[in-house]
Image (cartoon, rainbow, N blue to C red; front, side, top):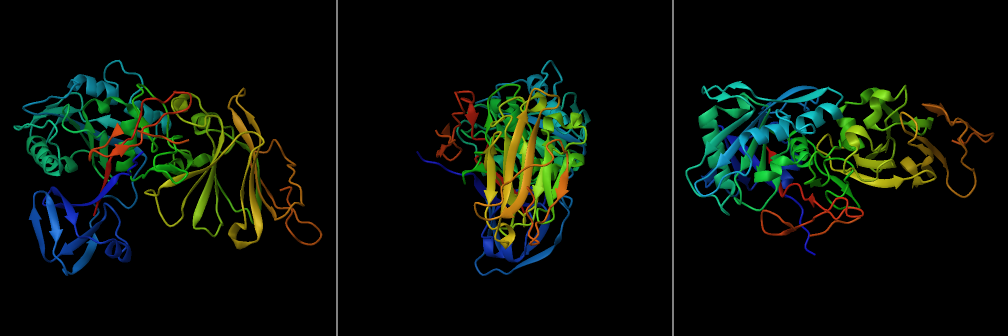
Length: 470
């Protein structure tokens, strides 16, 4: 089996056009701490050709300033305006009509589960995607969020970066500069233009879909997630393999319902009223946690526990993946307690990792937590899905390494945390699936999800490349 990750390119904006940037080294980016979508650089000598800017060898680069293309940290609350462009060519057309695309994305017809509804439901109304309806700056009238354009060339099996640039130029000419009018630009390519599924700028403005893949909620939500600044969700060091949320594999399941995993959800802030940061050196958590799908029914319980203080440059997140309502679709590990991690040094663009899946009676241990020589334990004492809301009773604490010092909960009904208890010596002693198979844009094999019991047989690798703005 040949496996390939996404193709990541450095992209830059110049005179309202997008170019691939060749010759920008990782060393320069790391030294200057360049942030995607925000920093501006001055290139003294370069060659511009065929949609690419090639930096001449030995050319000195200068970081000028933060150009504010994106605000300092994406906003995950409020209304984002979306404009979709349906692209046809001389030899091929898109499979879906403008009205059907609008219905699939925004529910403007009879589609009850769509991208707009799912973002609204997952955020409990805090984040809204709205179709652009009105007149563009060039006088084009848009009635359902979708515009149309026909390119005067053939496209079957010919789509490439230059063709992308030509399409974007044509869109800006017909409808006006999209960045000045819309938060998100979605481009739908005609049938057989290429073999990829979708890709997006991260963070950024643009996402591109191969024909009828625009129909599927998890694929679109995944790419909009890239626009918002989120990278993939991994498991067992394999990209996309955490399918709890939409930043793992997408799929071709119509009307699928799931949200984001705990790491992404923490950054989104939609459930911040139920967040808890735990310092295990001073506190034990001993109580019930609920799933984000029942956030509104939590009655004072927490939904996501972030454990800080380890010396491996990671934070750890504990959540209950309640498989109901807004999260009742293809989410894996339903009704389990999940331990995730991310790199502390990174922000919302971090790649998250699923560390452990826990049922009632299960536990997760980190040895030598924070260099203390002690063990951190996450223990699931009970899982209930017959109550409203469903919950998991979780105990999180430090204990001395070794077979002694039994772990005992002394507060099974608690919704919070308790101070560490100390013994007479002064020491704290608080009882306190792999996916395989498809083709990507470059003709390489992608991973295609099998799912468990065939449930997710339509899993697709969501994107073959992620663009980064510099």
